[in-house]
Length: 121
Image (tube, rainbow, N blue to C red):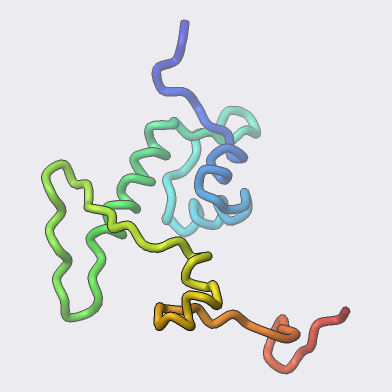
């Protein structure tokens, strides 16, 4: 019998959220993510619960607006329009900056891990 709503392990959920398992544990402890179901020592989440949480995060991000401004209303179905932008490699190319187009500032020289502490190389 197939489960219509499969369980996801801690490792799988962390991978979906692009975070470590430890960060996932902290999020649960801080009530920033739904708690897991326990099966012995295993922490499990229903896939639908994780997907609903991700959808709520997406909706909150789409509804965000700078302070003092109201967000643009979403079209029917709650999906926003995505604007296409130029490829980042086109923006960073030296040829583009000589034609008056936008250019990205690319760092040059050695970088530091923290201000005042040079890298060991």
